[in-house]
Image 1 (cartoon, one colour):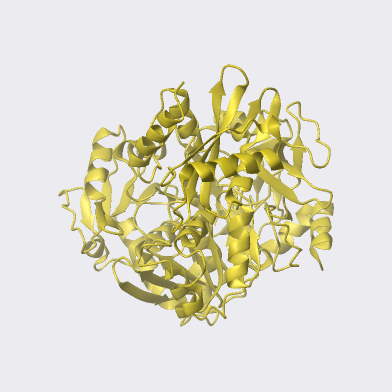
Image 2 (cartoon, rainbow, N blue to C red):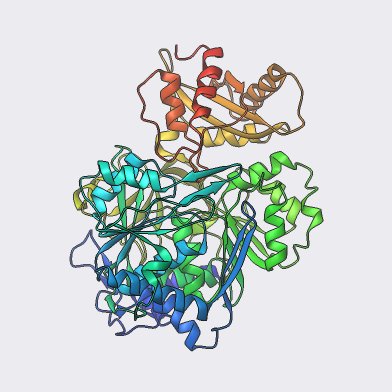
Length: 629
């Protein structure tokens, strides 16, 4: 069956579709129905099923002939450490840590915060929680103490599992002082902290509260897999809210298992035993879905990589990993490829490695500009697949279903709505927009299994944030258009659509044009306040390495490009060259913060910012353009 048949089959009978998909999961008590809609618009899936996530990700593979298959490949170019863990070894490690948690009084439904760097221990900690029915909440390692404290207060964890430090190229970030400070300022106090000591920085342990990772596990009884309901949460993952109060996205166990398992073959084209590499971090949703759970549930080998696309040691690191471990598919953020392209525009490093095992490159996390996609296609000679989803959904909403049918790629579009998602483009009043017209992207309810059923302890906020704007729909917060073939184009966050003298313009469309300039490696366009036109677009350009032409010439050409391709209506006259753009640690450009600096407004330093010094550089560039006015 091709994509059209599969999608039509889901649409005609979603109940049968998801019950069929649920057969690939090993249930303790199989569900008798998929959807529970009695509390609409709040929906639940597989409510009467009983299951264990860890059993499906680890134990069943040990029992079904994959005991000696490698489950986790660890490669840290920053420390030089490398290791491999089979499913059988993983089972022992996870059961022991689960036993240590049980010994500390952690039981089903208790929360455990995980604050760890990118080593296999982070995955082991997640699985150990799932094994005993505890709900984990992973906080990105090295997150500021105040941010960690708000999450401690919201999730009220009984225990915290932390690494002693994280390691970046050229620096060691001590996590333990941040953790101690967070606990001090938090109102809620965890009873226990289990600390994984990394040799680069040993943490001081506080007697009576802190335990060493190894000592905590000495002589424990290995934990069995605890049965949980399909609607018991497996985790809570905080995503930064606009109000500064983080939103705890809840993930229910049953739907999470079914949906992720389904995507590994149907979306990513993986067969059990293949090596899948999501170059992300466990602190983000990609790390949850596609470093930890998705690949392991499906019987794939997953890669835990502690490094950067460039600088650890060079722009060839990704290619080395792909060659050495025979990676079949890579999933990363476009920003990683922009960094590689900026360092190695001609692809000299690509030629040094044997990439013959790699079949597909998947990009997500932010808009993939056509320039980056074309460069990657040109260098790798394989399909480069953009796809689109959110922390809230947990798996792709719009993509190219490589395991069902490789659809023609239209550069700039993440392709089509996947089964489970009825995606519509709506006007502000909630009416469907004509083909090719920009509107708010919304999904007709119910959302599929594996997506968020609510926010942690914040049902009212859940309704307000996602359900109230368009009754009967989930509001994505993104804006876009659909073409005559049903391909979706994500143009911007709805708050990145700017209004220039009454014309609604997408900053994303302008960025696409600027990125097409031969000297531009990366760019961002924001809307700054203007007394006359309401808003004006302003462009920030980062140049490819080796470009040494006068900046004024390049900005002039870029302004001309936008004028030619969008027209004078864009009023694009403000542009400057900068060394780097402010980003979150997952590579998203902090456009909203840049707008506030340009407008001279108060702003809160984003918790997820990678390097705050970049904001000062942006302020200097803005002053040269005469902003804040």
